[in-house]
Image 1 (cartoon, rainbow, N blue to C red):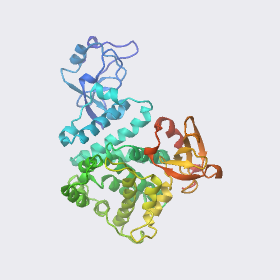
Image 2: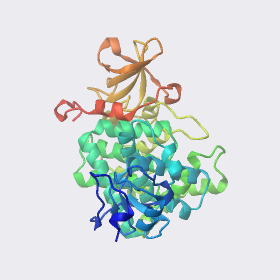
Image 3: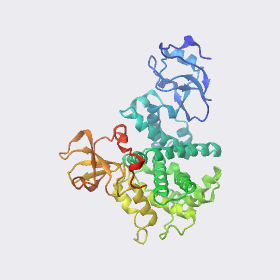
Length: 434
């Protein structure tokens, strides 16, 4: 039991003991990351989820903390409860992957006070929500236990579905921005972007049944599970893939099917979609079996997301160019799956950067009445200066027409999700694409 005298409490705060119902996404935290004399930025828990101290509790001395922790060098927090921790945890995982550390070390990653300090920025609340999803996706993809893997996958898909139903433009904005602007946890971000694109296209354009929409989302999230570690390494590798790596890439679809089966996945359509998601099979979409229909949609979305993402060895393509590349099939004909994705996401998708006829540079915040006329927010004015207040433009108006895509690397203005995500929200009755 925690002794009341062991820890100093502010008048308005107290410390209690109790069990939080499962599930929780517990991760370890170094005891040295807890600041003495300052309110806790997260709730502290024991290994089984036992509540040790509420967020905001003030730890008086290092000695009292050791007493409270039972002499343990590490405690636990729920990653879903702490915004700052999510960002620090992602940064730590990225560093370990970049350093080519063993999977066991990555799985056991702990956070220190230095990590927390290095990853605090303005606008953490909204950014951290998406960084938290990156952490969850990364953890899920590396989990080899069938029961916990399926639970983590189901939880992640529920959260993505909630985001898509509540704010599809904001979901696309966040994932396209993260995909185009960083290489951290590439496999997790890539899987989520492909998944939400396929789910949206299945729902809004292709009008697939709800069950098929859910399955294509799951298949997209797990299509590369057989090469998660390699995929993250290749994103940061400057040299060309080695012969061994090329063999892994060529065989990853079959490896992913095997990995899913070992994790208890037996749904035929799901496995078929993963097995064939790299097939180059032009032709009609509706005439294919369900598994191959999903595979083709994933293949087109996968192509878009891969072109969008930066690598250590190359720069990314602008979203408009990446989207147009998936519009035509291997025979240079309009591809039904690619066309559905473009109709869903737009030539200028949320999160992408564009130049207007006014010579302003803006970020796309909402899809518009058609694929080329989204709503945007101006980031840089016609004189090349960052705007203080965000100016919203409707590019369907002639004076604000889009004239070109702009690569993220050419814009030095920081994209603040905290300020921009509210601009992505639109009432369901105002969505012309539904």
